[in-house]
Length: 134
Image 1: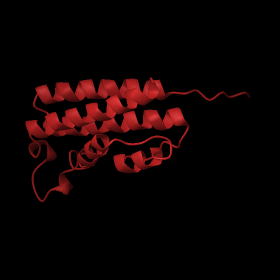
Image 2 (image 1 turned 180 degrees about the horizontal axis):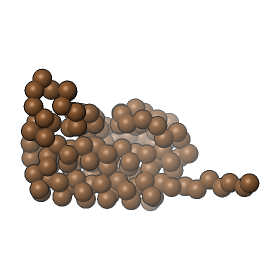
Image 3 (image 1 turned 90 degrees about the horizontal axis):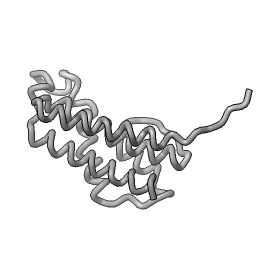
Image 4 (image 1 turned 45 degrees about the vertical axis):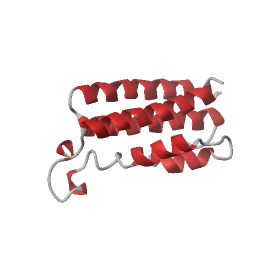
């Protein structure tokens, strides 16, 4: 059996862009916790697009860990790193009630947080786009 490895970086990036579109729609409907989570997912997929392009392992969900895997291949702008710091906080807390002493995550996030998460995801996606389409 012959197997050929395909570069799926553009597929990862396309999904990241779709996730960001979805996150913005969620912000518009008031689903702020879910929008924050989907923004984190968009950034994660954008970083994984770059990892795929460089043929590096794609594993994990910590955006800062994923970025550190890229440091030998490309420089990471501080704006991207800062966005990932903020977005990392939304991977678990937006979905699991036991993160907080009481209340559901759906009631713990604001429109402002959601809009900033959308903006942070866009920063990461734009970074990925410049590398993949250079």
